[in-house]
Amino acid sequence: MSAPSATVGIIGLGAMGYPVAERLLAAHGTLHIHARRPQPDLVAAGATWADSPRALAEAVDVLVTFLPDLPQLEEILEGDDGVLAGAGDLLLLIGSTSSAPAVRELAERLHIRSGGRVRVVDSPVSGGVDGARAGRLSIMLGGAPEDAARAASVLAPCGTPVLLGPLGAGEVAKACNQLVVSATILALGEATVLADRSGLDLEALWSLLGGGYAGSNLLESRREKLVTGDDEPSGMARYMIKDLRFAADIADATGTAPVLLPTLRAAFDEIVDAGLGDRDISVSRRFVASRDADAR
Image 1: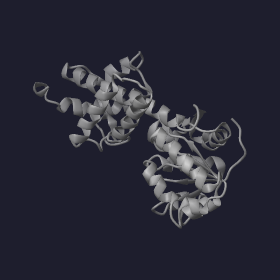
Image 2 (image 1 turned 90 degrees about the horizontal axis):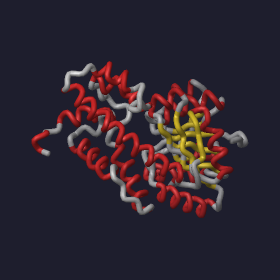
Image 3 (image 1 turned 135 degrees about the vertical axis):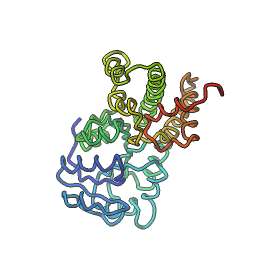
């Protein structure tokens, strides 16, 4: 997909947003940024600091956002110093994992309030921090074809952007992605416990099985954590609560009676209730190991 060049800004420079910003700056040569805290390293690398979301919107025509969810996005849209106060013709890219119906509703409100000047593409990603740093994210786009083409040209340095359908399609795809990821990481954690308690060499096991049907990018990225039990966070387990809730909303909206989804939601609720929600999703090994077989 090709599209005209754009003046790009980004807001939301956390674990995912920061490496995305680095890649955007390196690829496009210029990047406008705003964050709650100063970003001297990005500025030193050539980024232009904006003092407020309004100033950021005044300077750009494509705004990439990597905020936790839509409530945080709405906070920076509103007010005298908000994005809407400074926006001209603006393409807003929503990189958060959010509710597809809520994204569509927000886009409709922005269209009305701005007289059509603010357009929205949902652009959630998969691949984690490692994928963001390496430029290997899967970028799921939903929106009008012309807007999505422009979004794809902006985000291409960060991975593979693909238009999957109209507005909200990216969020549906992300919910499907998280359904697969949550099921896989629970299976990997459970299998690791079974193998460990049976006396198997875990490194040899996952090296072997990774070459067969059990292999996946998720296993490759989490193999060392599963083997060693190191669940220092890369992707926090508690985020799955929200993601799987969105998947359940889609199931309801489409009249689908899911088989795995209720079990996955219950498992991640249990992980958070056990105080493990801030650990990496590979905490599934510790979670399974800690459960009392006699209590089930």
